[in-house]
Image: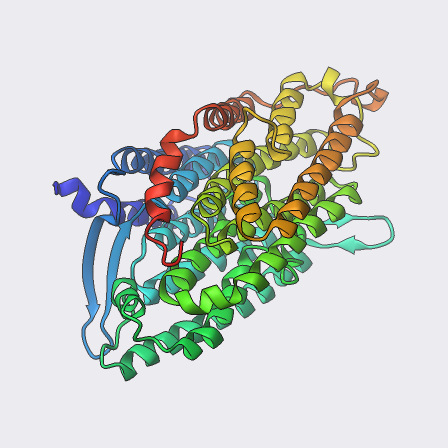
Length: 503
């Protein structure tokens, strides 16, 4: 192991964290300089993510880039233990890509940009920390670091939505998000403390994922204990993943958030919930997970159908994408609940694929809203003649969302379908119906917003900015690349899936 391998995981967390802390001391009036510095920090984070992912040895598998820094020795036994495996490797790559893209298009942030980037990088550091933490205490610490900045990012820099008959304020969206996610965090924390207490009763008190995993693998963690603790993680982490019926915070949060935050929110943050169910629930409580999987896949199926039907009834572009995210996270949850190697691999790939396409959608919608000051699809029409490149990119993202072959969403959903048909065939049929519903609301959105004759009010409308189009082109390239050749991601994901108990 070389020196870089020893510190790679720590650098992933420290670079955005150092960027966040450094910005606190920058002069408040230097908007462009702040943005340039933010680009520099996010570029380093992206480069680290790319190098780490590219150098992950999928032939060896398991946790790599491991490092442990003792924090509190026994009897608590809390250490900052870091590393990544085939499940977390694509997630850190996703975070690096979306963070860099989100920072690039944030040149439009006029109000207190310094504070905006301070919170954004704190959120990014928390996301990296969750994906690489191998200790439950620090996993929860980074989980909260990722969640809590969202309140201010939405409440201060977000936007309110006027529906004519009522007003959905940004403060409402921020507070609703905070209440739901803190409630979910409480359930997670109770589950973590219960696991620590159980390990203590077994004479091996630890927060270490590796140590607790060994106890689970040897059958020392009581089955009844697993059955009542697993729901705490399923609901706690599931709330952040948009699990029905704890999903209602998500569309309101999406709509109220500024563009970069929406990109990270839907693209990366929701994946923390699904990742938590896998990393904590499935690895540490395998028997409890097996008992609750029928419930989880049923809820995931409701996610798929409810999210799609709700998206069909929306007229606000962001609400459509928000409910679409709820639906697509349903596929992730269904794939996890299959406990099938193909279905689980599809779930992890879907996390990456959905992260890219939904981040692209929010980027493009943000550009449209910035120029037109509306997101109403009944008002927006014929934009293809005014914003041709934006339209093309949105079409690619939409087609990926409905699972068109050759784009990233297809192979991910295909694998989830196979997993569900192999384990819960009736629910697999419903999942396919959900994909058909996705096609309906996506094609409806494209037809109403971009097709037809342009309204005279948009006569002077121009295409998205060069920066936005550059980021959009990069995202489109990744969506097509993964759709055509998913092997680089899948070979890493598969070695991670193989280590999940019961899969």
